[in-house]
Image 1 (cartoon, rainbow, N blue to C red):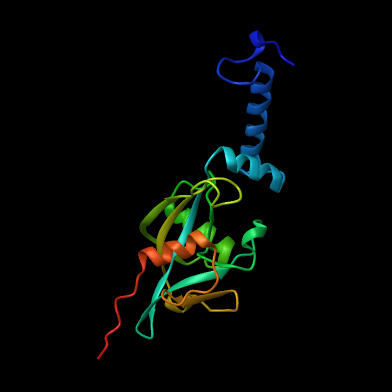
Image 2 (image 1 turned 120 degrees about the vertical axis):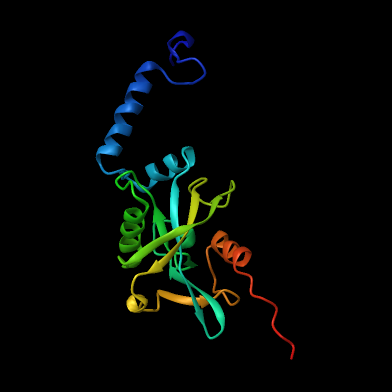
Amino acid sequence: MPKSSDVIPGTSFTESDNEELIRLLQKVAKDGFRWPTEACMRVAHAVVPYPAFEFVILEYIEERNSILLAIYEGGIEEYRGLWHIPGGYLNNRHHDKQAVCSAIASREIGLSNLMFADVFAVYWWKPGQHPYGRPVSIFVRCIPRDEKAIVQTEKLRFFPTDALPEMVPVHKDFVRTHFRQPPQSTQ
């Protein structure tokens, strides 16, 4: 147990702890901002909010707004098998919004031809909504450069915004909040 005089004021860290943390964080940066294990990533995520691009890709199908959703197959067990707005965490390798959009879309849903249009909304997850901590979702509107580029499959498809499947709860709330359908005509 360190003596109180060895502890950095306002923390429980000693100077040795501080140096070790700096060394380890530099190692994470050197490894392309990849954490060595899922457990490490969860702890880091709970301490520092991670930004994630969430791709809002819309189509108007059969006179209804539709949004592109993907089956979640990532590391969060609680979300596996649910539909979600496709996207992924940002890292410090890309410094241009189009490059970030292209890299994440290619990695997450196999689309490298998405064009960044604009930031649609930013959402700070509330405590308890995400198993890792409190990420920041940056919902970005993207437009495919080629309309035929999106091939719908069992794991990637458009859904009407008023008929959503079982989804990651925050994403479903986002769609319901931002894409309410106009009232249907009674004529």
